[in-house]
Amino acid sequence: YSPVQNVKQSCFLLFLAMFSTFLFHYFISRTDVVSVTPWLAPIVWEGTFNPTLLDAVYYKKNISIAATVFAVGKYVMFLRNFLETLDQHFFAGFRVHVYVFTDQPKEVPKVKMAAGRELIVQPVPSSNRWQEISARRMEIIQKLIEEKIQNKVDYIFCLDVDSKFHDRWGTESLGGLVAVIHPGYYKNDRSKFPYERRTSSRAYVAPDEGDFYYCGGAFGGLIPEVLQLAKTCRKNFEDDAKEGIEAAWQEESHLNRYMWINKPSKVLSPEYLWQDFKQREAEIRTIRFSGVVKNYNDIRPN
Ligand SMILES: *[C@@H]1O[C@H](CO)[C@@H](O)[C@H](O)[C@H]1NC(C)=O
Image 1 (cartoon, rainbow, N blue to C red):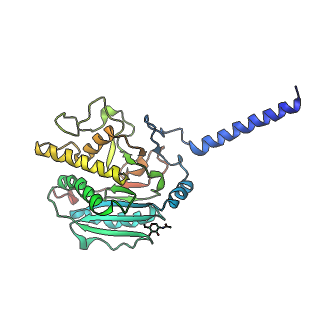
Image 2 (tube, rainbow, N blue to C red):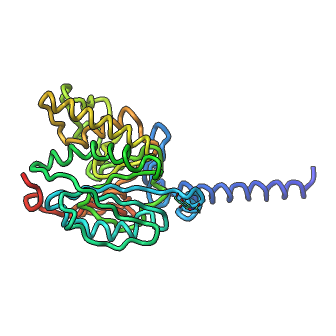
């Protein structure tokens, strides 16, 4: 027995304790929110990741990211704010291709993007029903991937235009299949989720099914994964339509069904699609992207 040995041992144990505390706070610094799903996918909240480290990892891979946005009818009014804030906060420093689908290409504001980033305007027909505009989104995303970006881009995010960025949305959000938890339901039990509840619909989710209620206004991931999602949701939507069924929340309902069967490999917290009319909650340390307050009567054609 040697007293020196004992001191050495104590010092080592003390060091070990301090180091693990440091690690814990550095990597899992949020204890007020759930930061992993039961199938072990990360749930991204401010304070659960190191942005500098993540950017360095992906910068070496020279990745590029596509973003799609639909601006049909009066929704073009949201484009300027959306595009200007996107350029500032969405994957800053990375190669980004923004695809704007619109029935009024001339009305798209000429927003100057940072170096290495481009804005591409794609004409689409107008529609008299906003449900139909929403319905054709999956078909258009499928075609965009198959015909234009399959071999050119690594990741894609499909975003709602009536929203804007306020803070970083970057490499922490990358994953195979990525979904955003809806800000309206993240504190609710799944019995309250507005899933499609008629068994006749292909978007049906049973009362004992469903993990989270996800937003239709933002989703993404690797190109092949999002292609599979778009194809499946489009087919289910169209097969429902042939039988005269329109799911409760259109493509959002189909997306939720898809995400129940095909678990997302990364889940983004409601920081990634807040709603401006909602009061901020204590666990929301930052709002990265949010839906702007709008009057539906002013912008929807029906
Ligand atoms: C990154 O990829 C782009 C497009 O393929 C290419 O033009 C560019 O040279 C690449 N950059 C590096 C540093 O490899």
